[in-house]
Amino acid sequence: KIIRPGLIHRLDKQTSGLMVVAKDSRAHRILSSHFQRKLVEKKYLALVEGIVENDSGEISAPIGRYAELKFWSIKTDGKDSTSKFQVVERFANSTLLELEPVTGRTNQLRIHCEYFGHPIVGDIERGGRAFSRLCLHAFKLVFWHPNGKQRLEFISEMPEDFIMKKKEE
Image 1 (cartoon, rainbow, N blue to C red):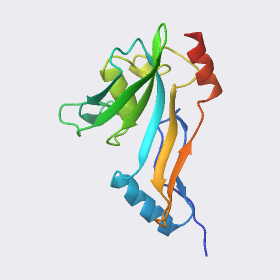
Image 2: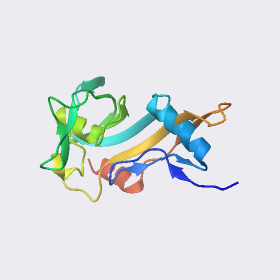
Image 3: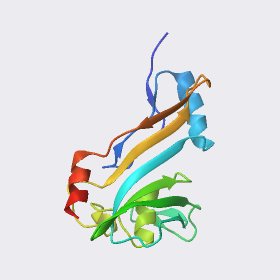
Image 4: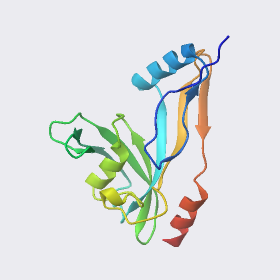
């Protein structure tokens, strides 16, 4: 049997955390289908600028690509996109959020955080203050094993530099 690993999904540049890699083409096909059909639970942690007032909510705004700028952002004729958020902890100048992308658009979480007035720390392109990295971490993935017999859950701890930035707040 030939083992040919393949990425099932991507993370934005500078985003840390969990990814799914298939060991063979059958697993790749099944897992890709699960991602497309929204059968996978994906959760992220983000340290965002400012104090988010609501404990939880939903951000919905169309996302599209400005071809001439080679930049993804809110665009009236873009594709519908939705992200859910929940406050984990509030600090003096920032808020730690748990984010869940309901749809899976390019740069969705970064765009939505900027759109609702709380860009991600380290995301200077979208209004966040400079930091050594983008404070966005894919910390939880839940999905069915390709054989369909087992629900798998993976958790990744917050990176050390992320924790240090949080403590500075």
